[in-house]
Image 1 (tube, rainbow, N blue to C red):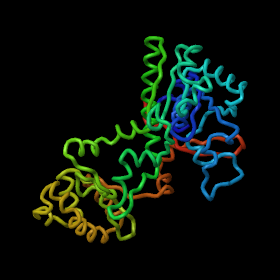
Image 2: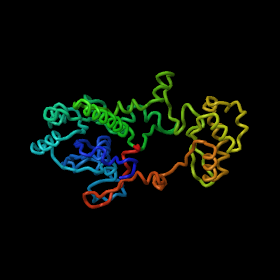
Image 3: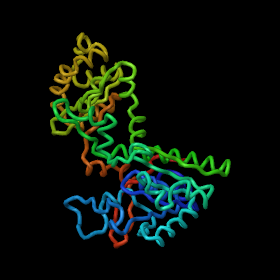
Image 4: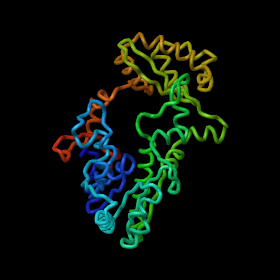
Length: 364
């Protein structure tokens, strides 16, 4: 796997994880534990040709393969078993696996796990110290289908995302699934600490909706404290300017700014030969810049287009001005740091699959 510092590939060696989850959130948690050295068994439904994401293919993907790039993204390092839970023998086989597991992951809709005897209470009877991680959409008693874009809509993300004059837009990554997965990982790691100290197992539950709402942070507080409903601003920050403004350089590269302090703004004006703006009452402090950001951007754009991206970024870095070149996915993975995050292995058909690690932290 990609090197993250320390010998994390054996950190959880001997831990047994049973993954009864599909799509993205649950499987990414399973892959996280696999990367840490745990033995992860993923159970898939043969009647649906396995996890539904096996069929979520791009137009450019090989239609003959039994998996998609989407599926490969969160299914590294697992043993895959195709078992029909509607078959009594199949359900019993999975219940035996659950009885031998340290952690069970599920994202069943209400009533499904109970029907198979794979809910927490049922598994606990034969495995008292089991840790059961469950992801729901809108809560464990809500049967609504929960796909990421629906949650982005219901939790406020779509309303405030997109350009001001266009319809609401979702964030391209299934961000709510990822947020819920991180919440579940944290809860499961705490549960493992508890089990080590007390010998007791437990159930850890998270809903996609709760994970989404708890991640609204400053946007939520802008409403809770000031009655401000965040509007669509594109990449612009409602509290800071110039932050999110995009400049196009002489070589047609795009650079985004994240200027958050007065010193950074002074440096920006110096680099762009706009020191006169420091005496302009429209831009005298951050609040006035937020109020007059359209006029401010006009000045910045005019100057930025006179310099190449290399020249401008070098000057920004030298002066400590937060800025970044907007990169496509190819350009991202041309960076050495991104290359170090790639995991490669062989799939069941012998083809090679690549994905990024679920682990970004380093232990030293």
